[in-house]
Image 1 (tube, one colour):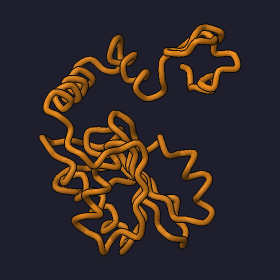
Image 2 (cartoon, rainbow, N blue to C red; image 1 turned 120 degrees about the vertical axis):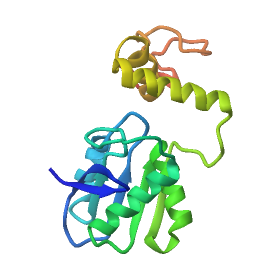
Image 3 (cartoon, rainbow, N blue to C red; image 1 turned 180 degrees about the horizontal axis):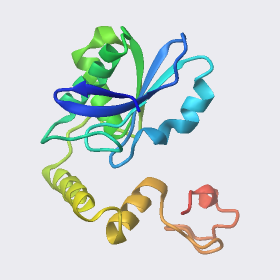
Image 4 (cartoon, helix red, strand yellow; image 1 turned 30 degrees about the horizontal axis):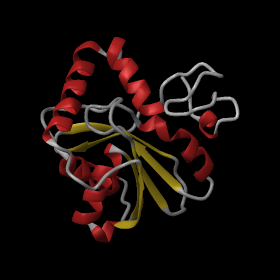
Length: 184
């Protein structure tokens, strides 16, 4: 299994190989490198695709507190490890936070920046506290009960029985413009 070292952390990555332009994919909170499998499958024939598990996610270690600037440094360390001078950075949510910081701190290393469902603003203290509580509960108990339900609803939407009214809608989901909403 491929790992690299960054700031005394052992971090997992995958490399599609190839000689095309490099694209580095960074995942969202509580996810891992595999969230990008479909994109890698579609792009790998023409691009060299890199995916990785950020600190404390998937198969990567976390040896203490860190911030998104540390994670940005990890992304650049992966490029260094592989001898990649420049890459397009693609980040979803948390991966977007770190990709923006990497682009800001190392603009010469970034060919392009693609941000998916992320934000450039600071979150209020209560939102940060809720994220921290969710992460702590996940680490202590795993993805079970209310933690799993809450994360699933956040990531893929709430389940609705087909034909029942959508939230805020006046007609049933059959034929409703929101009927294409994802269900789990």
